[in-house]
Length: 392
Image (cartoon, rainbow, N blue to C red; front, top):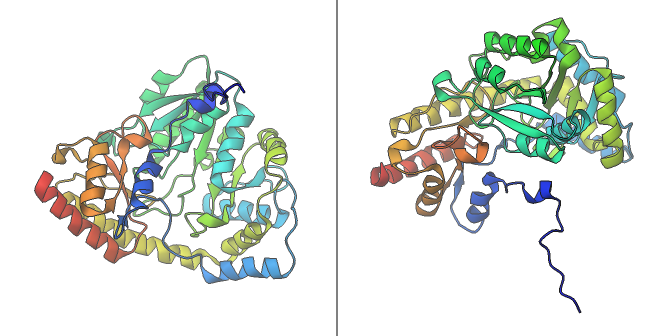
């Protein structure tokens, strides 16, 4: 029989996707004992009990069937009310909101809905590993614009201007930022808004970490000006703010014509977000605020510990004002970021992620997540001190 070869069985788009740099080191860590992980961007808190109870009630009440493709209307109303209460932006829950399987699906739906082959999306980097990949899988072209540490990892609007071409369809922004913990000021956001209006571009704003900010007021992009709502797709969810990563529930808000495009794709690929998770999300918005504030207070305590500790070790770290990541410069070690992460894992059993995994501008940095308990961060810093005493 003729031997089957695998060289061309995948599409070029899929074959060309880079494996996630985050997973490489955690596949190694999974084979080791006594590893302290500062890598996976997931809250270490259990979902608050009222939210858990709501999910259990949903199951016991037999809520085990499909919902509307858009998601439960009660959930969409709760999302709309929450956004209006926090930021003053009004969305029609019937036509301008869709519940998704986390922000990951919302990203996929958005880029698939708005991009034609060859359309370009400007993406400030370093950024979460999915952004460029989702653009590529939708047939688009990601155009990376480096956000520099000298500017606290806020993208320079002039760099966005220089990146615009006749093929540019959208500007993507994601603040607070994964991996840097950076936030964007109102002034920078307003300048990005002016650029989008000047060139008639869409703006995709991933605000999954909107409530996890420290000594800073989050700037919701469509809240900057009433006119921006018509060109913005706002992405959000429950994974980070409410410690609900495993529930897989998020949402997209935007103009009716674009949301209808998302729904059209969603109905053929997913049908509807998990019903149990939708019911839990309704409860999260109804009673979760005290738990959000408790988690923010604890994250801030850990933030101070890890940032001060890394700076003390000679790993220069700027002040992150959002999310739960620190992004130290590891040049004092004399290593590149890949080597640093590998040696730190093998020698001291501490897992962090190379900054280069997050795109252009991440080289020479590592991402250290402080969504783990305080005592473990203390021990990780102790191990890193021993590591730097040998390599610093």
